[in-house]
Image (cartoon, rainbow, N blue to C red):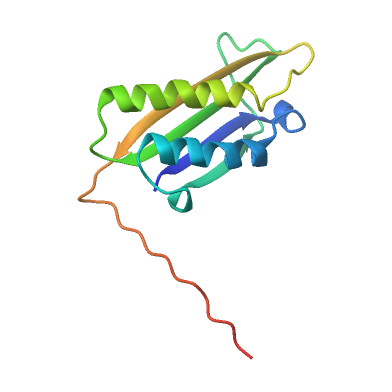
Length: 125
């Protein structure tokens, strides 16, 4: 936790520095929610097909979903959303002939329903 999912149009595969974004995103999120970088998990999902607006071609999208344990104020979540959107824009390069739609949503995980486990594998001889 936080769990972060990033959906992006396939046309951005070459112009979106996903690893760089993830590495910059984790400290930003951890600081905003008073958490740890080591608790952040981000996965990227390329969307091979998207319909945006009226379906015209030439529109690409990136949508970031951040799921946090419940208890953050609306102000904290709003500031995080705006900060992530600003950060994202620095990691997506232009694609000629395309307009970029970028968005961020911060949601909550119910503390009473969320479970997690970490286990380090032991090396065998």
